[in-house]
Length: 427
Image 1 (spheres, one colour):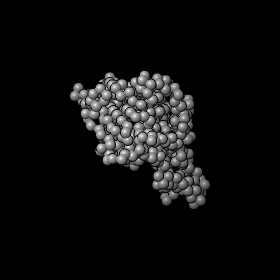
Image 2 (cartoon, one colour):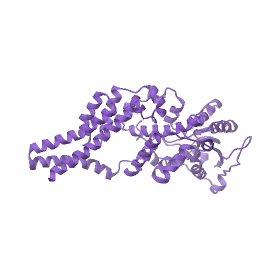
Image 3 (spheres, rainbow, N blue to C red):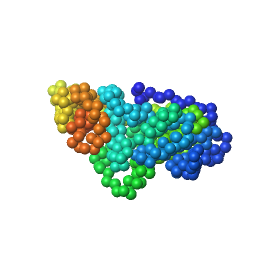
């Protein structure tokens, strides 16, 4: 499904309508809330909303204690449904060992989602390296929730927004400068090995590390936090309120609990259509995207009229080589297939004249077709992505390297070629 399509909206449960009393009276959540067999720890919030019992379990995605807590709560409550902070893709990624065999990387490239996938790999790698310090696979508590529910015959509700939509909304919300800051920060963290003492490890076991990371980023980039945390708080709460049953257990990262308690207490299912959309490219960027090729082509035509066909041909050839050579060099540095390098050389001058597709996507597609990644490389990308040499050794990461370096080469060529043509136009 194209991620621009909106997923189906949740249906409201008749028992989950607005509350008649104040939220504080209707949704009572305290650290000492009790389950059927005694009080729960502070990580568990118990709310009564519209006559229904909602048990909200805040977890750390790399904590064995959270795994044990989730199992204990579900077995105690025997709920009508278990809601988890997963979308369909993330659930498949956790539960299916052969999940990568079904991933069509060429389709990802055709939909221009390669950058989103790479960012997802970076975030997963960061979390996995921290999880390795604790001996826990990231997301184990979410998977445990689905396993316990299945064993008890309890329906599972995948309550999170499609991760592709979340990442693309987060990316679209940032200015160019903020995007550069984010990319540089993510790249820097990718090659860091966390050095943690026992006290830091103890603290990590007690909190949702990825949410903590997102909150830190959110201080510098509020737009990023809005898409990654705040919107998902609303989405998760609405999906939970839309689930059927008198008793619900919801398993989410600890970083979502505070925002979700407020949303759940309202008892209202939000209209999710707006936060399920990928924002269109702004008019400003769309104008700039088409203005650059229009100026270049117009300048070449003007040179041809005022200085003659020979001058026009020389400038056109300079444009071609200024784009082709740096992009091809990028392909060579990435150790791309010879035909990938040739594709970079031929495609860059033309992709630079349209905002619809970049040279990086063309070369990544060719590289994927000629040197497809091995299934095992998808399984080990979390470790490989933090090792510089692995970017050339792994077929999968080499595709991303081709994508990045040929794209950068084309970008350099666009500026060099454009400046030279403008200089000749007015020279």
